[in-house]
Amino acid sequence: MSQSPHDINVLREQIATYGKSLFDRGLTMGSSGNISQRLDDGGWLMTPTNACLGRLDPARISRLDAQGILIDGDAPTKEHFLHRAMYDERPQSGAIVHLHSTHSVAVSCLPDVNPCECIPPLTAYYVMRVGKLPLVPYYMPGDPALGDAVRGLAGKHCAVLLVNHGPVVAGKTLEAAVYATEELEETAKLFLLLQGKNPRGMTPEQVAELEAKFGRP
Image (cartoon, rainbow, N blue to C red; front, side, top):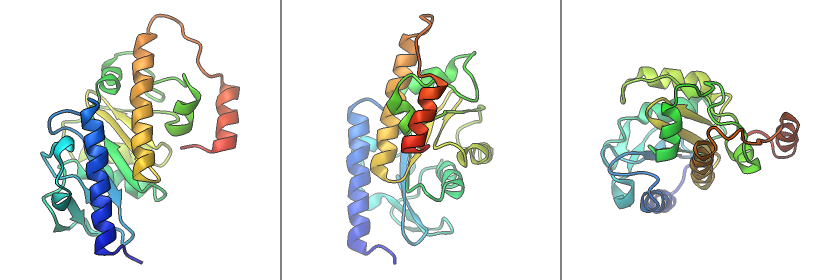
């Protein structure tokens, strides 16, 4: 059953609320970053192109049908293909957050990070909410080929890090996607603070124990 107009308006309000929270805490700036939420009819709500997440008008948030055709609101983010690629590979995901958050972007600029696991498992909550974070090679913003590159990884990972760009994070709910994005940014900060200090991370056995109990994100 599809959501009622009232329910869709509530979801639009939630996107605006979370967007403002992320913006006010410096996790995104200017008109960077975008948020989407899957609808029961197979369509999506997405933040509009060139929109500031700190000043979203819920009524202008884009609504797309299952084919990606705009139903109402403003034109969607130009990076809508990133969201669609993640959703196509992750039917269990209900929302996606893409930011240009400072510490995560900084990690994406480092020359020697492991492309299969950009940030090691430093904390239990990082393992539980993000898991392994693969690196996606650089593509010009708006290049549809970036969607294909993300699609190749999204089936196995709830989050990816775009080189010189930022993270794309999926979650079962919008709240879960936001929490995972915040956890990723804080762990990126820890990773940068610990550079050159030979930190003690989670052991493979500890990671396996967490995955067995809580599942992979």
